[in-house]
Image 1 (cartoon, rainbow, N blue to C red):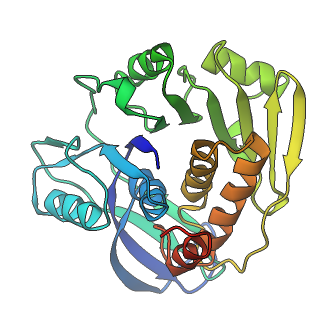
Image 2 (image 1 turned 60 degrees about the vertical axis):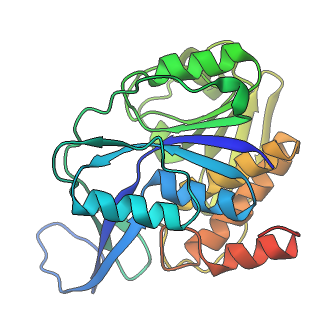
Length: 285
């Protein structure tokens, strides 16, 4: 399978389960759901490991006990963490506030500035996935594109920074108030001339892919929602897996929809047993 490099966060998530939906000014009871491994690096990477890809993670955690726990948990799941950087200081927990309908609100501390250092040899990597705004990300992405060997897939940044890539992914909520023109033109301004496809997801309504040739819609896969955390990360993982298997963009999106449906039906942010079973049925895992 493929060698895949992920530039994404890994977290220690603390789960707080509320007794009712969030509303301003209300009081809530919660159950402490404990700690679990999370973040885009883990949520995306573990499924790709299960699909028999070699997955390495570029991220940053503190040089403390929680940082040690995160790296140990990720390594145990098969992620290569040798490129995870450590900063002097504490790794703060991420608070995931879960409501009974499976929706989640994330409360996180300000992160220290994460600066990328020496670039990898891009000839070693078939795919590079970007889901963070580390300093130097644009330089790495452009170098990977210029190398001509690496497929670059990126999530739309939360701000207006550029995202050089071949495939850009965003949710419909990411686009609100930002896209004031045709989605393809919006994406080209962010990603540059090497952009091939722009995927916009819309939950149970499926996803639309835009390109220079037009647009296509791919339906979502129905699922019983238990926990929406990590749905977008797992969708991206399924798309990457499909593209690394030389599937068309719509076929890769169908794979992403399956992975996302299995993710939201699992009470965790990282992939669950449903995805493992699916991959076994596909001759993987």
